[in-house]
Image (cartoon, rainbow, N blue to C red; front, side, top):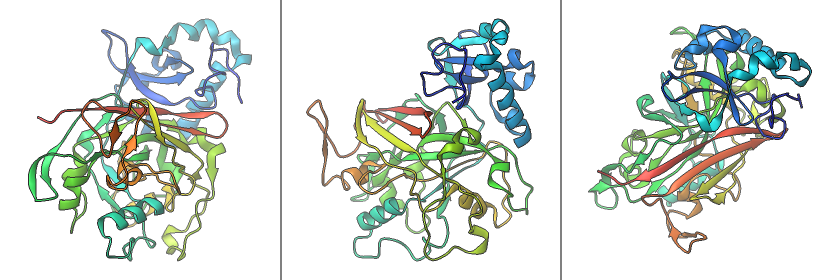
Length: 387
C-alpha cells in the first residue's frame, strides 16, 4: 500500500491506491472535478494547474485517453505520498472535507447500455417469468444479452426516486408500480471514443473506470411490456450511479480470469486478458444488510461486453456508460425479486416489518469492496410516492 501524508487516508478504504474521481461543489461555487482521498476531496484544477478539471463533468478529461489518465494518477500519487510531504503546504489548502461538499453526476452520460451478464440472475428470472420454459433463452450462452436504456434518466446517488406509473400485471391495469425493485450492478465508464463503423480495441484503451449502479426496476410494468422487444418503461424511469468513478488502474489487485464459458465463445468474444473482478457487494435496505453478492463469477466479463457492443460498428462516445446487469451469485442476490422469489418469501427487517418489494420511504444503499483495501463509492436512493 502506498502511504499518504493526508490525515486518515491510510486508515480508510480511499487511500492512494484508490483515488476515485468525482464532480463536487461547495456552497456558492461551480461544480468541478476532484479526487477522493480519505474523507476529503482534492480540488484538482488548482493543484494540477489544469483547467480541464474546472469543467462540471469528467468528460473533457476522459477524452484525453489512457496515457493522460495514467500520467495524472501517477502525478497525484506522487504529490500525496508520505515521502513527498514537502508538497503538503501547496496541496493541503485544496483538500476539502467531504461534509462540506455536494456531489454531482460525475459524467455527462452519452449512451447507456445495460447487460444481463449473471448466469444466476438470468436463470432465476427465467424460472420466475417463464416457469414452463427453459430458464435461459438459446442465445444467452453465445453472446452478452443487453438493451439500450435512457441516458437522460441516469442520476447521481442521493437523488430521490419517484415511484413510476404504467401498465401493470396482473390485468393489465394502470397505476403506480407495486413491485418496485433494485438491481445491484457494476457500471463501466467509457473515455476514449471510436469512429462509426470501427470495432473497439483493447478494453483498457477505451474504458476509464467503474462505478456502482442501481438500475431500479418496476417488475409489474416490466413483466407486461418486455415481450417481444425487452425492457422499456419498467427500467427507463431512473438509474442511480455512485458519484465516484474508480479508475481501472486501482482495481489491478482485483482482476481475475473470469468464469469458464461453455460453449466457447466466438473469436471476437475470446478473452485475451483477465477482466473478471473480485468484488463483494453489500445491499442495504433501510440500513440493514439484505444481501452480499459477489461479482467474481459473472458469466460475461466487461471486455466481452465492449467487444459485442461494437462488433457491428456501433461507435463509442466519451461518457458512454454500460452496466453488468444484476449481480447475483449462488445464495446471494442483487435484486428483491430473487431475494423474495417474486414476493413468495418476504424478508423480515429488524424493525419487524416485512418486504417483498420496495415501499415509499425505503432507502437502498449499494457498496462494494475489492481485495487490497479498495472501496467503490456507494450509491443510495430513497423511494418517494408516485404522482
